[in-house]
Length: 147
Image: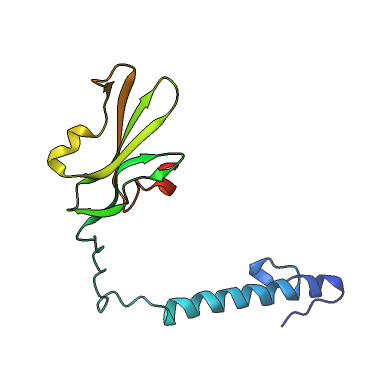
């Protein structure tokens, strides 16, 4: 058996190439923790349950107000409307050159999605109409319209 004396014997740990005892201990701890996770970890692929499908709501809930202004809010009282998935919530903006806005908020079914994105002049001179649709619950209420 061959023994090394002096500083060379205390600095080398053979084929690992580690130069100090603390590094060797950290390496051993790392190997033990990796082996432990491999042996005791959750690798049981045979008994896994399939992931649960995402549950979509049965209806899309939208804010409804038939006459609203930015300054006064909903003038006729607000309500909630429900439409099946694939439909949308809509806000119709009626604007004029002076900057006053009137809004109408409602639901739109799939068959009415052509109403969603258009801008055209109103039959009343000086006004134009812009509609905007969104597809999340209450995305057309006044607090969420900003986003």
